[in-house]
Length: 373
Image (cartoon, rainbow, N blue to C red; front, top):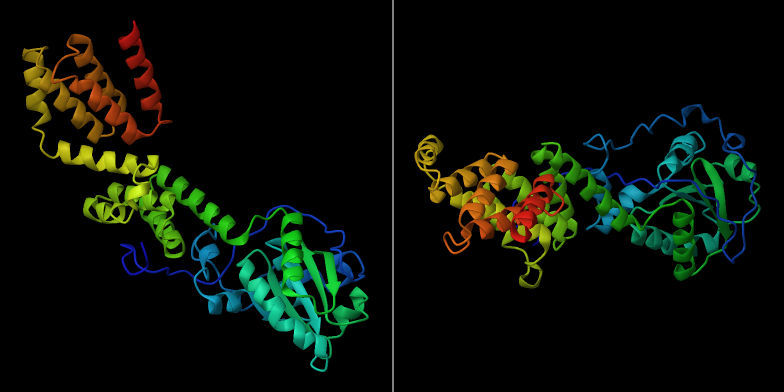
């Protein structure tokens, strides 16, 4: 599925990025290291560190999950969000405060410095390729010499990595891109961060699933759709979006999403679960009045068709234990009814509910007791 046929359209979210958990301190990278003073308070007055920069883009959801996906498909968006110039006044917000969210590399440079001009395109390319694992902040030491002096920098270009408000590692000179990528990976790992894009995807999927489970399918659908804008073949997002659309009553849109699933991945358990829910919904649409069915069953306890139809309706009303018990009652009375149709339907329920659903676990125990008693 691509952005052109995604039923939920484009990614409407702003440019902000995911966070790196934990704190670490790199101990050198095999290259020339920069010496610096320890303690963020030695660098600048940190009174503004807790306040966001005046021009910071605020995420549109409270968890920041949606905004952590922004820029995956566009290098221009990535540059705008990941790389910026800073000043002495803004250093606390741009570096000290921001590094509490994810590692920040500070590139100290000057216009007259040839190696600095050589390093600039290489480090910017590496940071963009990391897609949110780190941010890059550039500081012109001719215009803003105080911070470099406090860090004890005596040669440029010099790059220092900050994590959780503290300088943790660095290098000097114009390194090749492969070495800069190694440095970025090392800093990210020391900070406890996963790979930027994958970490953001996993965080988004987890948040969407939680919203879905707590009865917020509309918000969850937006997150799943944002993931699919960047990873069109993500099965968890496809199944999640289709499930949310089902919960919202838009069965046709749910079918459109499932139609995008490649043939070789149609056996994915999450995809099959949504397909089973759609199949059940189609069956229930043709059932009769539950009051009439109950009256038939009261008049004739062996009216297995009425009991079967009531089980289907109970499932549609999310009364899963009641649905399972109805089918089990048919099996107990007559295993051969409708070519073992009650057991086959019960297995379809289990698939639709999911392997770990309490009703599935309870129903399987009862089915085993009935079959092997």
